[in-house]
Image (cartoon, rainbow, N blue to C red; front, side, top):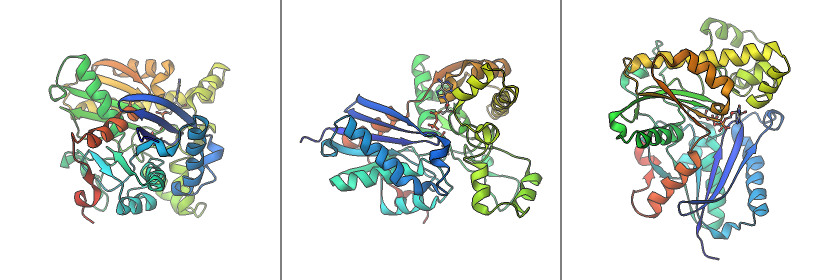
Length: 361
Ligand SMILES: Nc1ncnc2c1ncn2[C@@H]1O[C@H](COP(=O)(O)OP(=O)(O)O)[C@@H](O)[C@H]1O
Ligand SMILES: CCCC(=O)OP(=O)(O)O
């Protein structure tokens, strides 16, 4: 069989998105939504490998796509060591870092691992593109306030870059002429000041900023220390409380905003308060990063799955439209961006990067 397709795999905290591309054209795609009950039994993200791999093979079989028709497999890259943007070949050292979660646990750590698992069986190459560990911080943004802890750039880099380019194109400008605030509102939330194309700061979608469908975001630090030492929870249990069972999922038992909107429609006051509080924290974070751009903001972009929600976007717009015009790009362009990253390498327009050459090991 001729090898002509690229398989794109995007594991997120609430879903696994898959797509088949032939050159630039998407042939098939699917979003496999995960229920909290299916994921909460795994203590570590890596333990979800077999579960998500089977779902991908089942989908390929249903679509009658044979892995022998694949030319390459690309996965969304995870919480690796901080690296520059680009298309990286998946190497053994990268797999090691993804498995242990060198910068933390997140579903996207499975992207490279799943890609390599499928590609190796076919003797083809696997890649990741602009992983969540892309770091374009100004040094001042790295200082946390505690000398042992650094602020990290953990960010929805793929989609933030993609929507920034999209906006520049729509405005008929070069991205280097624009200052944007991009709020990616997904399972995790990244709110970044994008100064002339560079993501110079971000809340850290895994640990800080607004709470999200499955994460707590920033918390009162004294209370969290008390909870850690209360003797009630192990380290592993605390990690799951903060990421997985934090945010909407902790308060309301679901990370699906559509279910929460249905609860609100039925008069559930608690759901209304919690959902509004998430929107309030998002608005507040946008206001905060506007200061990083000294108020010179061309546009605020709301993107990610939650940007489909009119309830949320109306709430946020009400808080932030005094800063700049708000543009809504619901969903994300991550699948397309992953495919394009691989095509640039396959078509020799760009050289693939080697993880080991970009980090201090
Ligand atoms: N049409 C919609 N209306 C409201 N919320 C939505 C809609 N579609 C998706 N969402 C919510 O967006 C969140 C997931 O966003 P997404 O960007 O797909 O995240 P991830 O890639 O992290 O899984 C979930 O809370 C989901 O319920
Ligand atoms: C660590 C940032 C990536 C992230 O939060 O992705 P999801 O929204 O897909 O969980």
